[in-house]
Image 1 (tube, rainbow, N blue to C red):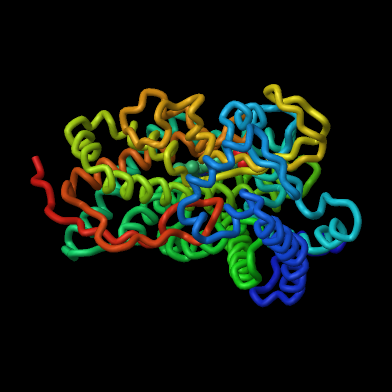
Image 2 (cartoon, helix red, strand yellow):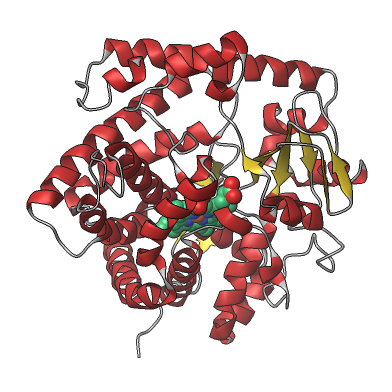
Length: 456
Ligand code: HEM
């Protein structure tokens, strides 16, 4: 009931009730998880260490191989984990396996705390009704509504926008003529925001603010956050809820041909509503944030990999058809989303592995992408790998990334145009990884653009 009390009025920017609820949720969802993980890490549990140890976070790949050596499904104190491509795929596609249940679904006092702490004006990317946090008919209904904007035909139409935006950003870098540029700030982060902003109908003046909010909110994918980061993230999410509400009102008054205008005309809380206000906010927030928080990592991870593999970079510059291969191999070799969680609801045998009902399983997508049963020489970065696209970087099954085609097109165009404009581009200084653990990318990527290629 308390939750419903807050459904229909937009809270003020200073919101003491929201603050108390956020603190309650942090205790239940993050402080306790952190204590469990730290305890498990101290007693040597490898995947808890992957999560807690900053050294393993910088380069988790050797630890994934250690985990692989322990078996297809490695049981742990809190969750089990897998690095196995076939088992991961089978779990992602299994009709009975659910996305991770939240605190509110637990029995007893923890569940009560979770339900009390749930705030419809602060739901994040892995809280219902986000697509990432629901299953079954509700998921299918919401997904169908959004899917329209991301069909292959739509994406082909969006490619012109990607090209024009990349051109504009590269012109700006060229004009600035600096010896050194932060590629994340000047290019990799701006391009996806501009594109998803245009798809959703977000005015350009709001892009920088949304990028800042999205950056903070991205931490919410990680378990066991410290209070400071959690508070920043939940403050950002609340601001985004308020922003979407105002924006949707503007779209209702003056609709355009963007996705948010289409959705705004469907929503409402009446009996015949296709979409409730909360669902609309959740969809808009997820599409917006997923649209730029991941693609920025794909572009910057690829730039760093090409910089470290000069022979392959020369080859791609000579054979431009290989740019699609660069994107697939980067998605396989160093994917922007490292893992995902699923819960097996009852005793099940999945791909020959018996799993006890109620077990949460951490699926290391990034490790499945290096499974030697699927990929030859999996530790080698090879832009011409014939089956690179068998990776699970976009997940699989009902939650398969809705923006996969768009992300592939954006990254291919962005990387090709960048390297063709600046053929001597090199990383110049130490790149800084983002602090996030589920999302893997760079916060700062200093590059020397070098010579500008002569134009035909
Ligand atoms: C390189 C870029 C991207 C990567 C690596 C990526 C990765 C993923 C992954 C792994 C999932 C599924 C998570 C799970 O199964 O638990 C997912 C879902 C999703 N992605 Fe992406 N994504 C990318 C870009 C995008 C873009 C550009 C958009 C927006 C247009 C987008 C929108 C979504 C949405 C809405 C979902 C939820 C789908 C559902 O649950 O039904 N993603 N993404």
